[in-house]
Amino acid sequence: MTSTWTDFRRARRRSRQAWALLAAAGLTLLAALGWFFTAGQFALGEPQADGPTEAPVLAPGWMKPVPPVRPVPGGSAVEVLATLPVKGRAPGNNYERSAFGQAWLDVDRNGCDTRNDILRRDLAGASFTEGSRCRIGAGSFREPYTGRSIEFRRGAESSKAVQIDHVVALGDAWQKGAQQLTAVQRQHLANDPLNLIAADGQANQDKGASDAASWLPPNKAFRCHYVARQISVKAAYGLWVTAAEKDAMKRVLDACPGQPAVVPR
Image (cartoon, rainbow, N blue to C red; front, side, top):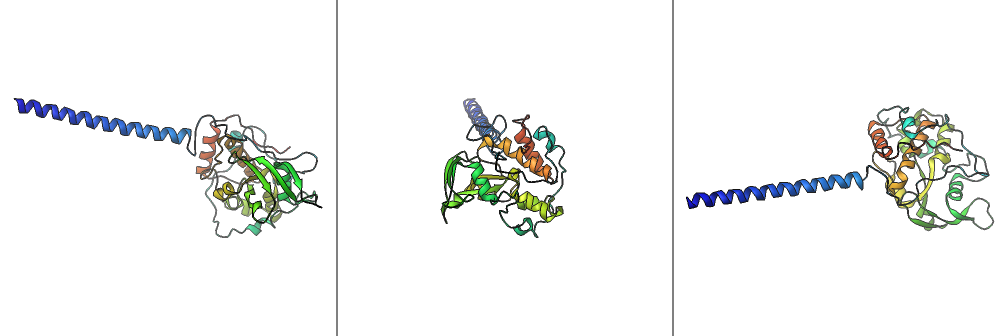
């Protein structure tokens, strides 16, 4: 009888231990899921206010708009996203940067190349190099992708700390409709201020040619504007999205359903 009671108590103890381990594993899984949806790449809910929430498009007085293929529709980014075609990627092994024209053309014909136009637009206290009315030599800004404060100084090594990012990467655009554009339309896409943001060099390198399904700005406060801007560029140039990309964009916009499309003005 004693042996039977002892075995029973041991069995109960092992059962409690097993349940405790299962409960701990469940809590760990819940914690991991909680991180993924609150702090991970596709966080739901309100974005964290880590830095800027938007970036400029045009600078009144000296920056001219670049003619797109079609005007960006008004309304919310969610509404415009619903109008974009959903397709798979076209082959990208024939992509060359030269298909979008020489880098940093003066497409708006204001006398300055696009890179310097964007630096002048985005940097606070931007100053020209001596003897130039175009070349930006220095400035500072609260960088939108990371939320960090960055000082720009022109130089062989220092200039790369601030790069000009194509919001819709040209390699991505090439696989999602840009091959059907004319050479002039591709030049406009590559130099349109709507599609350009001064960004942290390392963040720009990390992004590469990624779409919203595989890269989003670390600064969560900027993601709604970033995705709305990608949608607006794709609408303006007749580009499409993949199913995974559209799902990723919708997840971001779930936190900001009223986010407007970005209309240059």
